Length: 196
Image (cartoon, rainbow, N blue to C red):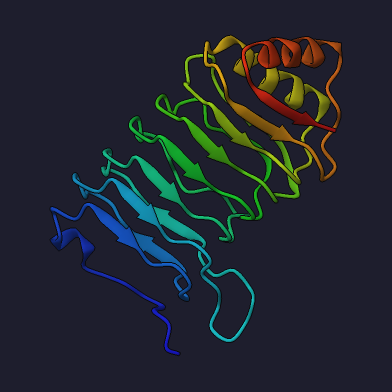
């Protein structure tokens, strides 16, 4: 089966609202300056004939109406795409993308659902109290104790109820007393919380 390995000229589609290009061989996609674009799903792209993730770059500058962004199973070990300006983004899926170190998502002010599972070298995810996050999937990461504590504290302060946060498995640290106190607050607010 032939795979799409390159796509160009999308900027001519000024009214484009949805783009779904899963299971292809794309390496780089330019989605800049598409003012109506609200749903992007470019997941599970592999180098043709292999099981090696191919997508390394997505340009979203100027496409500020995006609400759902799914880039799972990409190759972002060299850096995550620039997500600044995506103030309407509600759903972000970056699971199994080779992300390591610190991932700062605190500027995504509308974020509700976040999936960073399977990033085995991801040590910290920075989020903010003001984000309305109710679903955080951080399974199979390498979150430090401080990172686990910070995530739990921020989520316990964001005022949301009946959410879900999973920071278990992988090599993520268990929470300290600070994190456990925040976990209790979350559970008291109807959250399901899983930690190591």
